[in-house]
Amino acid sequence: MEIEKIAQNVKKDENGIYYSKSDSSISYPEEGNENCFQIEQDSFWFNHRNNIIAESVLKHSAKKVFFDIGGGNGFVAKRLQDDGIKTVLVEPGKTGAINAYKRGIKNVLCSTLEDAGFPPKRIDSVGLFDVVEHIEDDYAFLNNINKYLKDGGYIYITVPAFNVLWSNEDTDAGHFKRYSITELNKLLKKCGFSIIQSTYIFSILPLPVFLFRSLPSKLGLNKKSNELQKHQKEHKQKKGILNNIMLRIWKWELSRVNRNKNIPIGGSCFVIGKKVANNVSYEKH
Image (tube, rainbow, N blue to C red; front, side, top):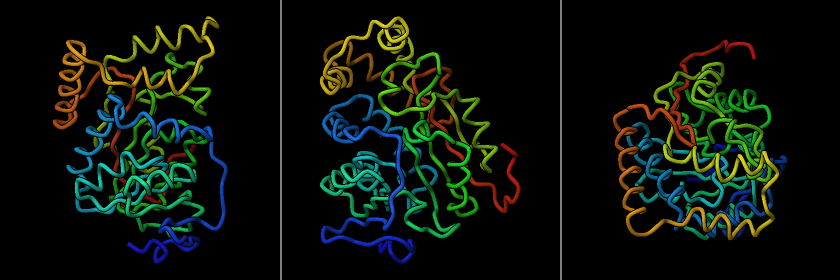
């Protein structure tokens, strides 16, 4: 795919990575992508999320070009690419874009959609995987995403769930909020999308997140520690009986999502929307 044929404000470097000719600021810590790069492969969280995303995209958008917006180091994009889906990684952070290229992503664009100069209604489907929570004006952002999608185009979103689970980790990660399924569905409908599927995922995480992150943050009990080591410990797949239990739960969740069945609670929201054709009037913000 030659991205410069559809994006009007990009250039290609000698490595094959596309860059926009202008840059916008993003609410994401500079070291965030590098830290994720070191834990993604062995993380139960990233791997389970990948399974949910990949099977859903294969179900709804298998033959469409998929744009992974804010896709970081390309962990999702690589899975989709390996599954035979033509994928474009759009990542404004240079570290993430370079890591994605090293990971083997064929189409890497270091930019935001807006900076790249994409014309309206040119994109088949987009993924925003733990991206929207980094956007202060989420309504304006999703309205803008709608503009680039073709009529009937799909949008796939994951975000952290429940403001009651807010902790210092959210602040450090550059989050503006956490969401409920009801809030996210309402927001997408305001932005001109119908809801194809919406559910929580990571059903067993709310209680440990509240006890070991949210509550200590609220009580001021968080101890300064090496963040990378802390996240490596949290994300590492467990062994023995605990691992078998978790694998069974993740398998159950994946089966529920595949059958479009709701999971009533979880640490993240997963929503699939579809752009309403010929939508000319969105609800007022």
